[in-house]
Image 1 (tube, rainbow, N blue to C red):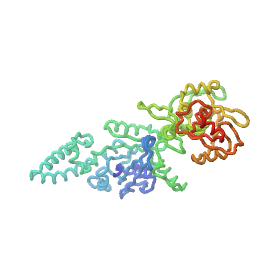
Image 2: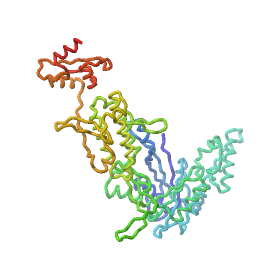
Image 3: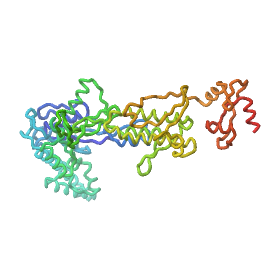
Image 4: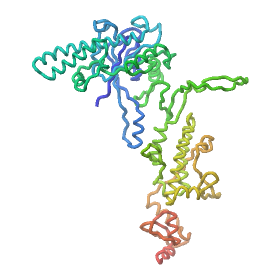
Length: 515
């Protein structure tokens, strides 16, 4: 499957090649301060980030994630009269006839050091110049096609007659100085002229190339381009191609970094970018707040405006983690529901709580720098109730009864015995991590196979029923199903341990079989 293709067009010296270099993270296109520095077309393929891929991997785990790709074609600048041979002419338009969309770069900055071919910066005039040249190129293509189709139509070919009709319809529309993208064609009509690669029939995106001191795109020149794009139902974007290209060049030449198309993204600062697990962006907050100065006076300011913010990537990291650990499931209405974890049912109650705490602490402590850190409170809630459901499922009871059994003041905690006495472990709250009271403690537990566990229990030489340590022989009592157990002492022990095996001394084993 071929990647989607887009052709970059515009007047000379508007930043086409600079934008191409920034998007492709290369220096393939010459970007000098003189017209027609690009002669041969430049081509490059870039990856297109898509947040939906992360959501899909929550349910389907692929071997590799391959994002969609976009092929960019950068051609020489087009000037007024290119169809008549001015500049380098319009011969390079043939390189973008088969692309899927047009990206028209429009200069929206004043700079005496950067030459403008017409002498002054006028975005609407630049747009009209490119549009007219593209329409003239399409007229030339259609006129040549009409001559061939007319010859075939005279022989009685129905398809050729239909093609001639569609071509005449398109030519009439173009002669009214209106691009073909605004002409309504039926599906058969569109299919008939699709092979000609008509440039004005392709969707267009206007890219306002702004100055370094106008990254927000607030200048009147940008407003004119945006208004025009809305009027003609076209796309619109703001970039500072110079800064993006300089960043790409600095990373590769100065820092000697190898830039990965999948992991490197240069975008507008208001868009979130993933870095070391955080989402990073520059805040745009026009809210005015007042605060008292040291001298006692009040001062109003936009305290969060233009500040770099780190935020928690909930969809890509937190939700993905909980789905992977089988902590939650998603209901039909989109809500998350905590569920029990079958893999922890054989652990003691306090070990289950410790496992959840270790996982919750790790993520909460890692995202301690995030400005929206408080949003992890919902994550801690889901973890706590998944923990409760796991313990409740283990004991075949309800969450309410578990909380009542382990109630400890306003919360709940599970007791466990140590050499120094009884201690309790409670679920971690987000406030504990914020205050630094929950350190990253990782509980190391060795996992044994079934045979190794039985062997170790026999080697311990302790009867798990009467506690005898001096018996001559220790044996293993095995049952088929825990549900078949009654209420005798040995059956009660096995139910509490949730094991189908019991290591006992020979006397206890004989007593078990007598019953």
